[in-house]
Image 1: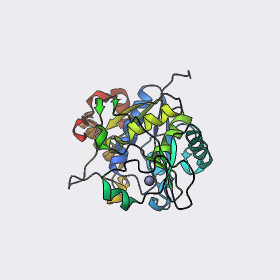
Image 2 (image 1 turned 90 degrees about the horizontal axis):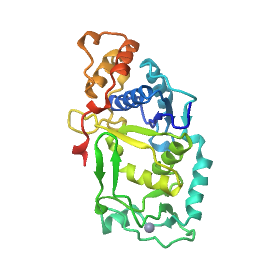
Image 3 (image 1 turned 135 degrees about the vertical axis):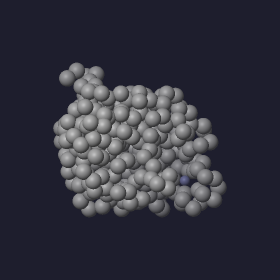
Image 4 (image 1 turned 90 degrees about the vertical axis):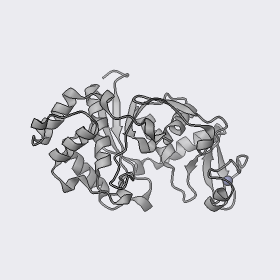
Length: 291
Ligand SMILES: [Zn+2]
């Protein structure tokens, strides 16, 4: 494999069994990687124990196997990378790109919907509880999505100095995901549009580590009956509750790949094979409406 080869990934957090929204992300990222003759990696994002449920990681992996979504290399667990996250955080500290924040969520909300940089100059470790924030005087306000094109993020619409390490000592998603995407040399991230707002921050972290960010392709969100985003936290139904071939057929329909009706009852591997040889990311519905 050459250095420029495609490496994609699916990175679920183990907060419950795989639901339809995550299946769509898994299928799309898999098809995109395989149709580019690339690798497809699976990473379990288990760095937030209070939100995780026991056995969920194994259940997700078993479900992926049921769907014949076979990953390359070993499954990666973020919980095994704490030292590496700390090392990268320290690098940002040495580059003077972090500071200590002692603000409470309540105090921040009192002033404005977003944290306004109150502790920006706190470079010495305080004696009371603190989070560590990214010092970000020039926030990125746009990026290019592989499907939707240029997306804009007005300065007033997000928190500039985002958290890298939380008050409770846990590493923030933004830092962990960038370190792993960097270390695994991911070339393209295919994921749900619920993470759109995270993308400019993640690109900035890549820049801070003097690395090129991967390409990003965001997928439309699967919405529940009430219009809410499906998630494990809203008790979306696990995909295991229905036959895998039916769910895969539905996922392909959601991605507007128009699987032929004759394949509706085909076994999973046959359907997946069809999807791979007919994969057209350009047909995926637009995410423009999320911004
Ligand atoms: Zn603060």
